[in-house]
Length: 237
Ligand code: DC
Image 1 (spheres, rainbow, N blue to C red):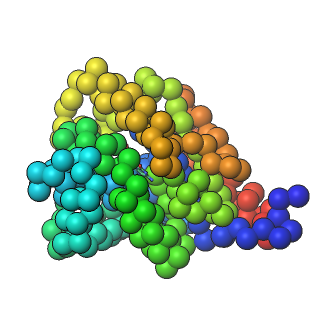
Image 2 (cartoon, rainbow, N blue to C red):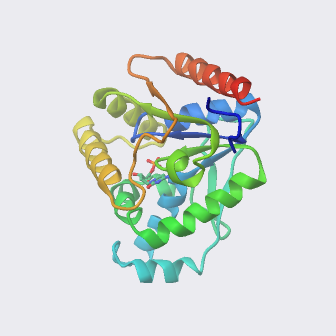
């Protein structure tokens, strides 16, 4: 029996998985449908990576990055009425929503997200945000580290070719047009770093539902996850 004394947090859904597995598309649709906040944790790691790059800080120089972070506040602003849009993300009052999707940030973010001090800072911010309003958290460690007691934990995956195609479409939406080979290399490199790093590697969280989305439409994945969520709600009543 899973539930009698469980401390399940009914206000949280977590969606983790490798790059290009469709997490953000689904997380935003689920958030909108159920009326939850959406927290894109990857955007936070990207924002800190942008800080390091713009200040010419060595990406492995944890102390200098942590020191520089003191000059900034990170704010996420999710517009539920338009789930096609990314969360707007601000560093102080500057809107960096587009800047954090650049090729440079994409190539550097896995290095910065290995740093334990950066992770500690962001995990604490993510826990604070998720305690303020019921939400969908999306990332690599949201069900394993940030909110292991979440009601509904999803691990999304798909085969590499499909993930490459999805990432290409996503980048095209952002007016970037990298070739398939380049995207595949970046995804494979990020998968490797994200799942082998020492601190909070990408893993299937305990009690997570694994959803392999290869060959599934967005609508099919959306319906499957909603179904899992309502079953968990019922089970944890
Ligand atoms: O989801 P994304 O591609 O925007 O994530 C960018 C990177 O951030 C990803 O390669 C690893 C890191 N990340 C992380 O380490 N932990 C998270 N919870 C979310 C993202």
